Image 1: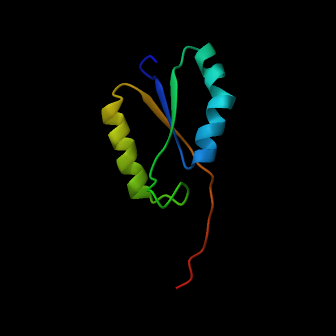
Image 2 (image 1 turned 90 degrees about the vertical axis):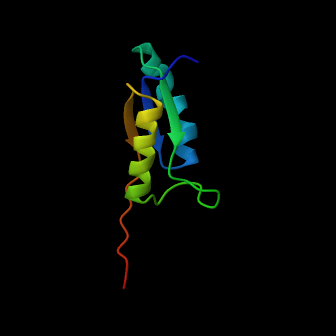
Length: 84
């Protein structure tokens, strides 16, 4: 595999499995080499409900690891009002 041009950060394994099937060929047709990955997860938490600080740290780490790449995200938006 060649060096990626685009890192797509997803919130869960479902998106990480589905997006390459839907987008990878199309992106490669335009000269992009994408990598799809799930960030901000732990062994107990498989995805979703990410804290912004965790996500930001993961994006910063990717920016260092893949210097010169574009980074994008693909997350579902869910709003839940917390009762105190």
